[in-house]
Length: 278
Image 1 (cartoon, helix red, strand yellow):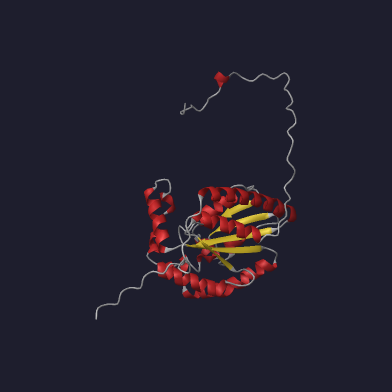
Image 2: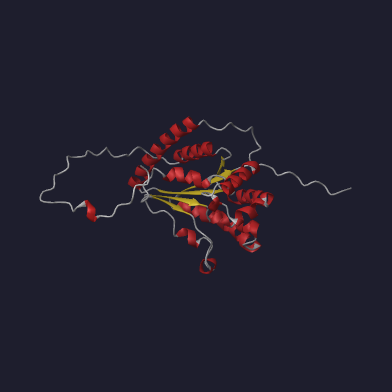
């Protein structure tokens, strides 16, 4: 007998029939409505001293960054931060594993969005061999207790896993290769992870088994349709915050006071950027 065939990759989205892409006009209209609600939520968060922390995890090109962008677009950046940490330094590697994340946690009235988080240990570090088996076991034991402590302290912690199929990830990788403006999004590490689809699936399943706790459960976002995924995620996020509309009344612009005794310098003494688009 010859060698048995390699089992086909299993999509994370094989549990149901695929939906047709969402209508663009419907998407634009609903996104605009949800973004207004996000602004209302931020006013309430600031007024009440609420602390909200949201983790975005998932495979490469699953749509995490696009969703984060649509959440932050309408918000005041003084009260909403995105944290996307790079490779830890030698000093950080010698620290308690969670230490470099803690310094970015929200103060009262703040929203913090993590574009990947401490779950790097259970995902890329595990699959790529960047952590030891002992470090992984310690993470699996410590992470639930760490998150329970955060929730007890009053932080609302939301965890989203963006689930994308093998075929869709492949198409998005190719689109990044073909588009010079987006080619920076595809790294050698992404290509390496592409060849380890099954290992990442196993790592994700184990991660859920150890860290899907009642105090901070995982919420899976079906992300083969980016636009639908964004709307579903934002809508769900809003449903988890007990906000009220605390939008201040619109300001009234009074008549501008006329300046007295001031003459502007001649225009020919200034440098202007040339207009290249007549």
